[in-house]
Length: 138
Image 1 (cartoon, rainbow, N blue to C red):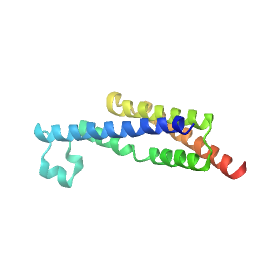
Image 2 (cartoon, rainbow, N blue to C red):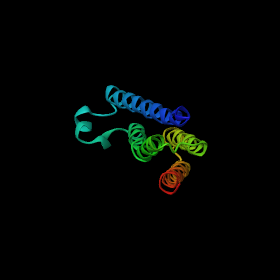
Image 3 (spheres, one colour):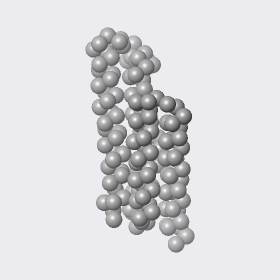
Image 4 (cartoon, rainbow, N blue to C red):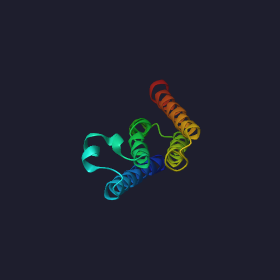
């Protein structure tokens, strides 16, 4: 069962690295293509064009909610609190992050992005509540 719980963690890690490379390519392309000045962006990352800032913000976002996701899955494994429900919730969270990143970068629809973010946040809260229940009350 640990592998089943870790699989969505690896999906989140792959997503983070994919966004890192996308952001790096966008930044490099903007400077090389003359759409961003290297001296200016070294002191002001807002000097990048909008598409590059979107990629950068999406990458940065992978260190917000996912940090709590990494922690809850690690603690669940350490405490022996993994279960089918915890695994299903982990998969659901990973899927919301994939959806969130897709909307962030491709469609740029703020309402849809917020709904994906909110769904992930609610799933995380349930995961933490489940972990607390299994470790403190059972």
